[in-house]
Length: 187
Image 1 (cartoon, helix red, strand yellow):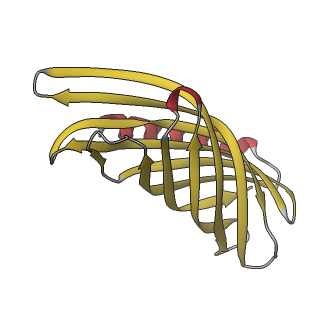
Image 2 (cartoon, rainbow, N blue to C red):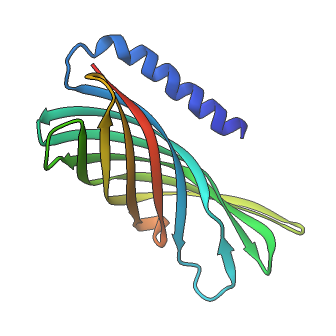
Image 3 (cartoon, rainbow, N blue to C red):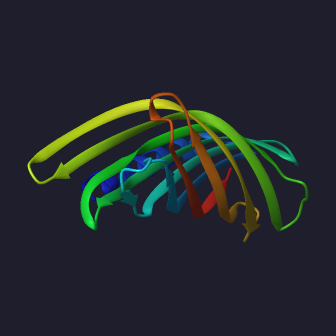
């Protein structure tokens, strides 16, 4: 939990520093909370993982009325894994993706589709009986999803989003799907 709080504080500081630098009306900064569903392939070894939580920090640039480029940081607070009902594993980490978002319509409520790619750093920890070990790996991640922006003013909006992260390389078969709610500020 301390690590989660430190990351949230760091994200808040980045937003405070970047906010005055963003003088264009097309730049946005946002934060959100996520409920993450796992799709981790453990084979037939009997490991079950629970859902996790996380948070996002987003920096976007609206290229046109229908297209936005976005950098998204997602912190994952740990998928807990158990064997025969005994908690023994945890998978946590973060991702950074560059995304393209397409908005098919304008107005106060704007649905969108997104695709993106980036990197994920995941740490698997084992704490079972006398065994304690952890291993970190980094790999590519591809992302696809959909969401909606709901404007409450010209410069503030709420968003809801669901996406799928497909992991590759050293972190292959650790896919997950966050459902995120948050707020964005336009500058």
